[in-house]
Structures are given as C-alpha cells and as structure tokens.
Length: 223
Image (cartoon, rainbow, N blue to C red):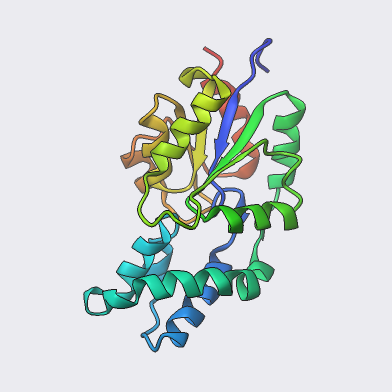
C-alpha cells in the first residue's frame, strides 16, 4: 500500500469496467437492419469497440455507404438505451476491485469514447456513481475526437502529477491516450483488445485477471 499517496486512476468503460460487447453488437445489428445495410461479423466489430461511434460506422458500412454514417450514429444512440442497456454488466470481480481501490483512498474517474449521456445512464443503472468522481466523455455534438484530450482534461482538473496517474483500458487507444500525457498505463486482457495490441501500444503493464489490477496500480506508482 502506498504511504500517504493517492493514485488518480482513469478507467475506460466498455471492455474494462463493463462487459458490453453483446449490448453493442445487438444495437449495431438493429441499426444496420433499420438502415437496410448488411450485418458485420463479430470479429470485425470487436476490433472497432472503443473508437468514436462515427468511425465505427464508417468501417462497418464501408466506403460505398458513407452517406448513412450520420443516420447510423443517431439511430444507434436511440436504440442502445432501448435494447442494448439490458445486456450491459460489470465484469466478474470488478465491484470488489473498485471497492478495494476506493477503500485505499485512490481517486477514480471514467474516461470513455462512449457518448456522455449513455455513459451516465450506465453509471446510474449499475450503481457506479459511488466509485467514480467524474465522467469524461464526448457529448452528442462531437463526431471526431481524440481520447487523449479527455485524459488530459481529467489530469488537469485533478491537478494531478502524471506520475501519480494511471490510465486503465482494454485497447491500444487507451494506452496511447494515457502515454500522451505521461501517465502510467495498464492494459487489461478481459476486454476487446489483445495482450499483443496493448504491449505494441506501449502499456507499462498488462494484467490478465481482474484481481491483479489493484496491486498493479500501486506497484506502478510506488516509486
């Protein structure tokens, strides 16, 4: 345990705290069906989770259907609250880890590519508000954005030193966003990315099990 030293922990949401791939898949499928577009394979979609929604649909729809991207984003946002939310849950053991980190006095915030209204709904429905002080996420006017900007804002708002900050996520973009501001980065293997992806992005550590997360956070920031 750290002596008189709080760690500022920035968590990605989808694929890190919440298991939401099924929710995303069923919502994307219904969106494409409503727009008369072809479905996309699960392995293709999984590789896109964590990217801005407009980017996801640009890849899913393909170059010949880019005219549908804005309509797809709007339709997805409506549908997710209706048919996706029932499929969202915490990864097994995550509540215990969050309780442990909170009890040690660490500060936790969410930094997510998910739209802010949807992220707030997930936090409310899963009772996560007691863990996370704030949510940093794009509002509905954002189409293209850089996750690193939200990481930087979270660090600035906290007045935190980068070396007492850890970004935790399941995709390369989480690692890149944290490293862009000098934060430590931890990749997690239970989400949508692979160890190879996370290591190639430069993660300071990669953990395989949820229960390994809290010790790794404190180990990185102990020096």
